[in-house]
Length: 59
Image 1 (tube, helix red, strand yellow):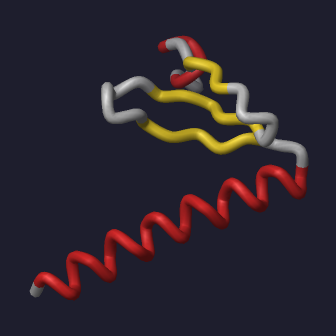
Image 2 (cartoon, helix red, strand yellow):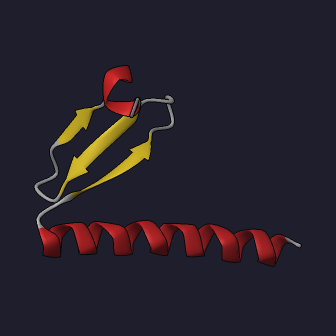
């Protein structure tokens, strides 16, 4: 069971790394939730921008 958990954690980390590479290649950004619960955009330049509630609502 521990190997499955470790394998899953590795797969998640690799998926995030791949997303960062794709964002850099395409001049875009990735969006994720920080450990503190904030939703942020991270640009390929390393700049991190906090998203507001208005950014998250697509009404």
